[in-house]
Every structure is written in structure tokens, then in C-alpha cells.
Amino acid sequence: MKTIDVVDGPQNVSRILLGCMRMPDLSIAEAANILNVACEQGINFFDNAVCYGLGEAERRFGDALALTDINREDIVVQTKCGIHSERGEFDWSKENILACVDDSLSRMKLQYLDVLLLHRPDLLFDPCEVAETFEILEKSGKVRYFGMSNVTPGQLELLRKYVKQPLVFNQLQLSLDQTQLLDPGLYLNNLATERSIDRDNGVLDYCRLHDIVVQAWSPLQFGTFEGCFIDHPDYPELNAALGELAEKHGVSKSAIAIAWILRHPAKMQAVVGTMNPERLKSVCAASDVELTRHEWYQLYLASGKFLP
Ligand SMILES: NC(=O)c1ccc[n+]([C@@H]2O[C@H](COP(=O)([O-])OP(=O)(O)OC[C@H]3O[C@@H](n4cnc5c(N)ncnc54)[C@H](OP(=O)(O)O)[C@@H]3O)[C@@H](O)[C@H]2O)c1
Image (cartoon, rainbow, N blue to C red):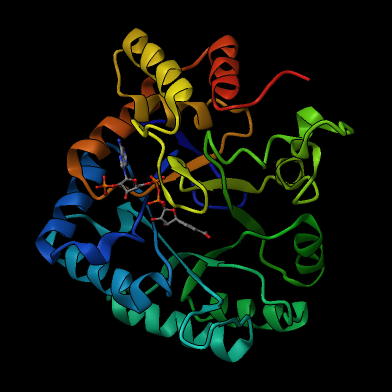
């Protein structure tokens, strides 16, 4: 498994993370098995969130981890808070973040979180309050590293003005179908396509400039995690291109789709979500595939884009 050293963040972390959003569908034994399979494949980074199954994903992760021989110090556990599903709103207040961290630690049966991300912007967030909260969390030893998810460069700038701790991750949507993170860099200034619209103010370039590692969420999904495009009848051209490269490289189509994300020089991480052990193994083979520039563009074009 390829790894990266995150600047001012955790070192030697796997390029592929296992996301636990779908873990509530598993029994505790099945969840323990998927954690073991992940570790055997070289994954040492696990993503979770307070809102996944309203805490159930964190609880399942904690119960499952206790059934394994995985050494706590050998893995990076990340969770996210700030989406308040029950109230149908976003909440980055000090009171909510501190309570969420305590609840997450208790559900996952952990003494500390390696990484805390704020999940999706609270329009009412106060950067001074976030700074004060992160200070408390770091000083108490409850959180080692901090980051964000789904935030713009402007929001990162604002936070970085006040927050003392480096913000080392930004978790964002990216898949071969959902390429809006990349498209404006190619189609800029082009009235012929909506892909020229910069929907996030150049967040990818901003993150690269500031050593913020992008974690690509739902890397095999179309829409807002509406379904997997692998072998989906609505994606014949993409599947044909994935199939051709899968055969050439001796891996699965899903591995090629993940290799496409890993090939980008931003050295992003891919947060995969399969809860199927065999699929997880096949996805992890992506780490051994280095796509050529031509293959990368071949896939981008097969996903429905054109050269301007
Ligand atoms: N920050 C955010 O806002 C945000 C939003 C969404 C997700 N996330 C994170 O991203 C993680 C991954 O999201 P995701 O689960 O949507 O990711 P994904 O890896 O793109 O999709 C996995 C899903 O596709 C299915 N699938 C069907 N065919 C597959 C194949 N050939 N290979 C692999 N999977 C296949 C899987 O089913 P099986 O389980 O049956 O294989 C599973 O339901 C989440 O767990 C979460 O940690 C973050």
C-alpha cells in the first residue's frame, strides 16, 4: 500500500482509507472482519462521522475494533462532526464540537482521536470559537490533528487566521463521475460548458499550495453517493475504458477507478466505502497501479468530458 507523510500531520498513512459510513449494515463480527481485511491490505486510516447511522457507525467501529488484534497505535482514527442530523442543521459551536468528541470517543471506546474534521460548513461558524475549541481539544489530548471537510479556500483562510493548529486535511467529493473538483482547471472561461463553472473557488489548488491533503470521498459513486458506476448500465463508455485498463493492468475496474484518483500529483487519499471484503481487496490493488498520463486522460474523457 502506498503511503504519504502529511505535512504537520500523521506520517506514513495509507493512500486508501476505509470509510465507515456503511458499517451500520454489518454485524459486529462482519465489521471486525472488514477492519482486519483492511489492515491486511495495508490500510491504516479509518474515517467515520458522528452522523453516520446517528452514531451507529462509530459504535460498530469501536465494538469491532475490540474484537480484533489491531494495535490502536498502529492505526489512524478520524471522525467528523458538525452535521446535526437530528436537528437538521450544522453546528460548529464550541459546545457541540466538545460534546461530539466526547461522544465519539465513548462510542469508539478510544482515549483519543488521531484526526478530527469539521464535516460540512456551519454558516454561522465563528473562527475564534473554533480556534478556542481546537485549543481545548489539543491540550486535553483528545485530538492530535485537525482538518475540515467540504470547505472552500475562503473558509480555510478564515479559519487559518485564528486556529493555531495546522489544518491538514480537506475531505471533498471526487470520482470519475463527479469531477467538479478538477473540471474548471481545464474548461476555464468556456461558455460552451457548465464544467467551466468554478464551484469551489479553486479549492484543489488552494489545498496543494498549503499542504492540505485532499481526501476524496465516494470515489466510485455517481451523483451524491447515489450508486456505484462500476458495471452500471448508464456508464457504458466509462466501463469499457475501465475494463480495457483493468485487463491491461491485471486488476479490477474499481481498482483502476481508484488508481485514477491516486495518479493525480496532489497525492490525494481515496476514502473507499465498500463493506465487502473481496471488493475491498480488489480496490486496494489500485495502490500498485501507476496509470500513464494517456490512460488518465482516456478515463477522464470516457467519463463524458471532452477536450476544449
Ligand atoms: N465528507 C463527506 O461529506 C462524505 C460524504 C460521503 C462519504 N464520505 C466518506 O466516504 C466514504 C466512502 O463513501 P462511499 O461508500 O460512498 O464510497 P465508494 O467506495 O464510492 O462506494 C462504496 C459503495 O459502492 C458499492 N459498490 C458497488 N459495486 C462496487 C465495486 N465493484 N467496488 C466497490 N464498491 C462497490 C459498495 O457496496 P458493497 O459494500 O456491497 O461493496 C458501497 O455501497 C464513506 O464511508 C465516508 O467515510 C464522506
